[in-house]
Amino acid sequence: MLNWVNRFNIFCLLDNHHYDFSKPAFECLLAAGSKAGIEMQAGSAFETLLDFYKANENEWLFGHLGYDLKNETEKLHSSHADGIGFSDLHFFVPQIVVQLDNTEVKIYADDNKEVQDVYQQIKNSAAEIKAQVKTVATIENKISRGDYIHIIEKLRQHILRGDCYEINFCQEFFAKNAVIDPLFIYSRLTELSPNPFSVFYKLHSRYCLCASPERYLKKRGRHVFSQPIKGTSRRDVENAAADEQAKNYLLESSKEKAENVMVVDLVRNDLSKICKAGSVKVDELFGLYSFPQVHQLISTVSGELEDGLDWINCLQATFPMGSMTGAPKKIVMELIEQYEQTRRGLFSGAIGYIKPGGEAFDFNVVIRSMLYNGADKYLSFQTGGGITYNSDPVMEYEESLLKAAAMLKVLE
Image (cartoon, rainbow, N blue to C red):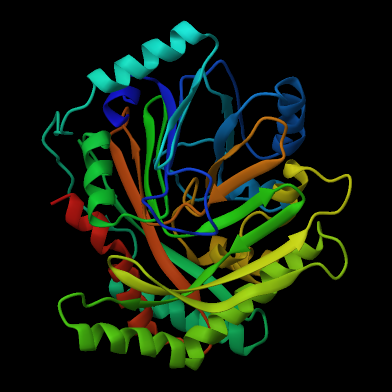
């Protein structure tokens, strides 16, 4: 499928990698080509998206929400440089949709002949994915170790003064004049770090190579739920005792659990804007989930959608997701703009799909992701974490490096 879809200028592959997160309806979902699309900057993006949806209500939709839609939802601004150039919002109606699960393949296209042709083309494309170009990428840090630690200390003072309770702070790793084969790098990234919300996304010369473990928001019928992540420890797969100790650290750490509780409260507040009174609940608190590089604490918050609201209302009321901002949301986004040095763009945004009729959708959180502008040869990825007053600045810096490790490794 990857070899076949790589010929299209616009495509989106969503890959679950056999994780059982609330019984996903598919193993892989692939959208190839674009029959119609919308690409917008913040301002009137959601209003225009609604018009686009009404014109294509019976079609599959795939696309992304960029972090800087905050400028529309919260009346903020962004002034930092962005070397990648993804728009704040893009959705498209695919020419072809391929849905793969453990027992069957479904192909949606305009006619039966096209379905048969696509199936045969995919079968004929089966081959080992090999690099078509030699990787050239000299990675630099936008923020030095000393400056990063100094900024964390400043953020702790904001928390001490009562400006906020928790803030998500990130740094950029980047390479200019970078040359990569996006398909090959994505296959290496997901081989090393196969996570349940992985995405390979192309919009002309811009790519997102995503190995995300986090769901932003899912809707199924009138039921919506979110699964924020807060709490990370390094795995030691070669030492069972040390690996178990890393798990126990998360379950016993008051600091990690405090971060998780704060983001859970923020998500509950966001869902209460769109859900029936009394229906918002925490289905799981401090769920311990293990991934190839890390253990994580994941909580699940759900609710029943108010009558008369649709999927666009859900996104507009809850975006950006609390796990990538902090609390209170608007104030911490102002602090993020003040202290970070790169525009987030698609990073800490979301990629996903809407089924025909709008009754179901699912979006991830764009983290553990490499973004690449093939025209400008600019490569970027960002990492960070939630900062509370009890955060240790040096440990926070080390955690940001841990989250970058898989991406650095695949570029070697």
